[in-house]
Length: 86
Image 1 (tube, rainbow, N blue to C red):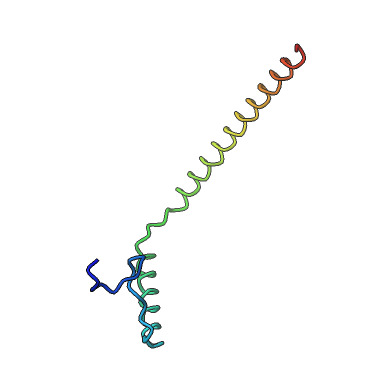
Image 2: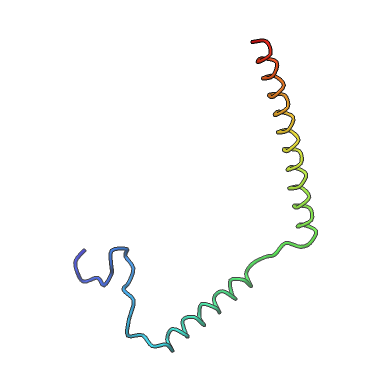
């Protein structure tokens, strides 16, 4: 660093402690406007897409749950047989 920078250790500008409440309100208003503009850019899925994707998630979840339960039963039965022999 050459010493002419007005930054702290994290690389951020130091906050201006002489700022007024009015400038803070303007910054907040600007942030809200930017947030609204960002929300307007979002392309929300239609109802049909949401229903299809939700159905797919539920079906895959049920199938994976059944596979895990089946594997658990097979492993448990196998271990029981091994422990009875020994």
